[in-house]
Length: 130
Image: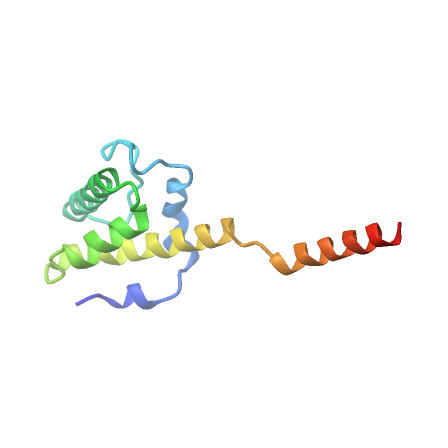
């Protein structure tokens, strides 16, 4: 069973630890020293967290077309024992990471194409007046 946190909107305290992923190359980072760990995880959950990301890293490196979000979705939801309470807590935190990752991805590729088309139309109009 996936717990409620997976389905809730992100709160500021949920994403503060996610900022450690900014600019971190997940396909090459050291899982023991570079990987941000949510502060609310206990030691058993932290081991599961690191192992999930390690398995995600292995998936990314095996299939260069796979992104970190796809790899972690597969690892967390398809290849994890969600009946284990510690794993379920970790999967909730993976869901928070995935929501954060998606928000950053969307922000990076949030282009207003309508505005650029308006600028092109204005430039064409100026050229036609010449």
